[in-house]
Each structure stands twice: as structure tokens, then as C-alpha cells.
Image 1: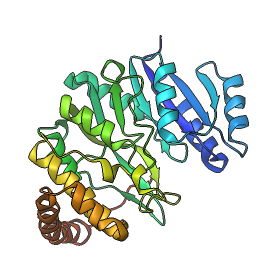
Image 2 (image 1 turned 90 degrees about the vertical axis):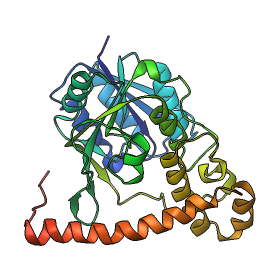
Image 3 (image 1 turned 90 degrees about the horizontal axis):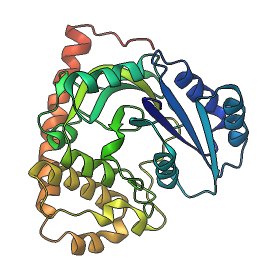
Length: 296
């Protein structure tokens, strides 16, 4: 039985797929299986997956009709046999010691979730400023709200025992993973390491685009009840985002979140203060410390 199951949903990404798969197979930690979930790709992605499976016994391929990222991830969870699970988007890629770093942190701090820093790649390559110290995160949602952690695919290793077979809500097409991640953050401690393990390609992302059917956006299905203060603050951030994206639905948002708009208002105030703080921090790093951007 492999120690780690790496799950990669694949949909029409033949341009980046070799880079992604090669980065997984080149890991210094070798006790893993790779599950490639072809979500009804119409380009050559499915064929590329099959070619890798024919060459490496650690690779398993599953072809299915197109159902979205959540259905692909849920399929991967059901088919996985590893003790730990990590997801990676097919247009991103690991750095060589990614799995070693994440499993090392999980074992060191004896927690079911291990999370690490990462790079972004777009116009230029920069380090995402997750400035949390190494160790167990004291308050998961406060750290999330202030961007000290960001549990995206490729940066987070989960103990399989804490994940259900259908973890992700397949009804959503935007922020489909947020509900699941918040549930895990509510229930479990996590360890963080500021070592970068993955490169996140932002060139093809469309997260800022709204859904054609707004009812498929998680923003319209958030639940503020019985949540901690900092989780409510993060939901307030998403509520502000909803007002910005769905101007025509402002009355619907008012109706759904009556009594909780105070968190959206507080978010605006805190964000305004944080922007000034970040500018001072950036000035300190780039001008006074002459911080260089690492080359990955």
C-alpha cells in the first residue's frame, strides 16, 4: 500500500500535463501512487494519461464523463488507497521535495493536515507571502483570513481517515472546495512549513469570473450560524466578493445574509488597514533588506 495518493483531475490541459506529471514522478519521496482522473477531456489529455500509466506502475488512470473538478476529486478519493492524500491541478507542478516536505511536517507535529508555502507563476515568478512560522497553526481561520495559510491543491496533505469519499460538493462550480476545506479546518489541527513545495500557474485561472448560474456559486450557500468569529470574517470576505461580482443579485444576498452583513463591513475596515500594513512590509523587504526572488 502506498504512503501517499496524489490525485490529479485532468480536463483539456495537454499543454501543461507533461510538466505536471513529470514533476510528480520526479519526487524525492517515492512511496506514492498517482491517480489521473480524466474528466471527459476533448483534447489529447486522456491519451497522455494512458501513456504514463503504460510506462509507470505507480500511475493509474480513470476516464469519466465531464462533471467538474469536484466529481473528479471525489472519484480520486474513492479510488485511492494511500494513507495520505494530496491533490494537484494539472496546470500546476510540484517542486522536487514537495512530498518529502509535507509528510515530514505531518510526522514531526503529529497532525492530520500538513500545509506548505508555494510559488505563483504568471507574468513573473514570485513567492506568495505566507509568513506564518513553522509549526502547528494556533487558529486556523484567523491564519486563513490574514493569508498566512492557503490550503489550495498542491500545498496540502490530508490524512485519508479524515476525508469522506464524497468530500466535495458536486453542486457547486465555483469555490467548490471551500465548503470542504472549512469543514476540515473546523475539526482538525494542521502544521505549516514555509518551505515552498509547488508552483501555482495563475495564467489560466478564472476564479474572478462569476457563474452563469449564480446558484452554483458557494457564495450563495454560506452558513454563518454557529461559526467562530474568524470563520465568519472569512465568509464576510466572500460576501463582499459576491456583491462585487453579482450586482444584479444584491437583493438576494441581502435576503440570504440578513443579520450577517456586519462581517462584510468589518472585513472592509480590516482590509483597508491591512493594505497599508502590507505596503510597509513590502517596502521593508524589497528596499531595506533587498530581498531577492528565488529562482525555481
